[in-house]
Amino acid sequence: MAKPHSNSHSIAQTSGFHLNLQKKTEKWVLMILALFSTFTVIVLLLRATSSNSCADLLLGLRYDTKDWNPIPESSSSASSSQASSNPLYFMKSKLVLLVSHELSLSGGPLLLMELAFLLTHVGAEVVWITYPKPTEGDNVAYSLENKMLDRGVQVISTKDQKAIDIALRGDLVVLNTAVAGKWLDLVPKDSLPRILPKILWWIHEMRGHYFKLDFVKHLPFAGGAMIDSHITAGYWKNRTEGRLGIKMPDTFVVHLGNSKELMDIAENNVAKKVLREHVREALGVRNEDLPFAIINSVSRGKGQDLFLRSFYESLQIIKEKKLQVPLMHAVIVGSDMSKHTAIETELHRFASKKGIQDRVHFINKTLTVAPYLAAIDVRVQNSQGRGECFGRITIEAMAFQLPVLGTAAGGTMEIVVNGTTGLLHPAGKEGISPLASNMVKLATHFEWRLMMGKKGYERVKERFFEHHMAPRIAFVLKEVLSKAMNHT
Ligand SMILES: *[C@@H]1O[C@H](CO)[C@@H](O)[C@H](O)[C@H]1NC(C)=O
Ligand SMILES: *[C@@H]1O[C@H](CO)[C@@H](O)[C@H](O)[C@H]1NC(C)=O
Ligand SMILES: *[C@@H]1O[C@H](CO)[C@@H](O)[C@H](O)[C@H]1NC(C)=O
Image (cartoon, rainbow, N blue to C red; front, side, top):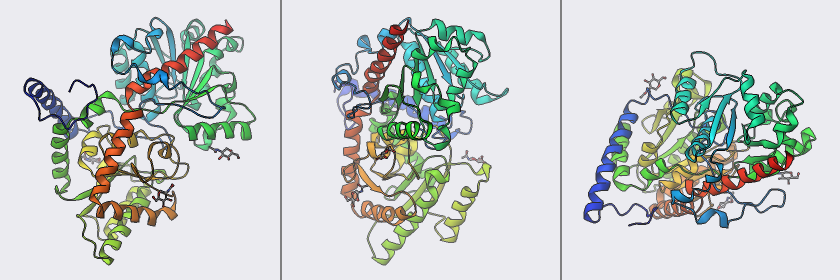
């Protein structure tokens, strides 16, 4: 029981510990429920507001190609839980400027905020600027700014000469996403050579419109680049060389990881049960039913339209073959009907045209995904095109022991082991039938769902925890710091 990450099947055990945990559990289950039931109030709705972003939290990493710097595996394990040996401790008293391209609830800025908190936690002096600056009266930006101020991050105005002074004087500058490169246009030319070697450029996207010299002309001279998946790093390397005629700087692949908060819920059976029952009841999904869910902002890129087609097709197969399966549901978390987008309308129309509207549930965008992860049985990751840059929601789902049905594209392929922790299908229209058939497979094979869920959890435990991250991020920061030193 003393193991820091002993997995959760253990609550109904011995006395004192049991009581203690129960109390704690109740407290935050209530808290989550409170959040959950009032979640329109929560400013923090997010989940990949931008497509192809790596969305939220940090870490994991390794690489095997000579093009990118391998991070020693050994640096990752030892340190797990002892705060005393925080691998980022060397950042104490270091001055760090963080440059964000926006202050919103999309993946990129939230990731940078996580990094800010990791750094203030070890006593680094952290200064944040947003460029271009958020519009006046933006409530989300205002609340995020306050959150940062509360946690010891200094938030300063972009136009301020101060930001440039800090970059000159500081130890490290983190530019977040390609677009943040625009900020360098504010830096006087003669100061650039002193700032560039201190830059760690953190990239979370692979959409074509980021590949512009306008954004990334200084990228080759940065101290280093940190990218969330191998596939994205490869894509950047190809594109920068092929299209823009520039070279990537030293590049480090750092997979993201699950936050402690999420793992606390995922590993607590009592909490999960409470959330599961609550959400299922709210949706009208019975205990014995089988909900498949997609949890991403509704957009073509995330493939909810194709998912519904697969869902319908799977129901047809089941009917034709007279298969005995639980009542299946499709849950779409990340809807925003107020936007009246074509795709939202199309999804609703499709459901009613096919007469499956009772089986299809739309849920507003929310930051609080844990209750849904607790409530569903299978997660679908149907991102299209080049797929997710990483797709943190996938490792979150796996933490909840959910099998994942994902497109064979992007970061999903670095997370899901086909046939073991889930099943992959092709992106695009040609993926509709394979996904339908995978849904039928999981519907008819209860034991596969359980096995894949368990294996998924094991994989997360092996490499996608927060404590896997710190040493890896630390490795990258050290590399860039030493490079910057050599330049001065
Ligand atoms: C990069 O280009 C090479 C050669 O054209 C190709 O084989 C590879 O798949 C590309 N990688 C990515 C991630 O686009
Ligand atoms: C979901 O969003 C819509 C439109 O923004 C709103 O009308 C509705 O009340 C929201 N539902 C919940 C449960 O918050
Ligand atoms: C995933 O595995 C299935 C069979 O286990 C196979 O048919 C399919 O081609 C695999 N997909 C990918 C992308 O590897």
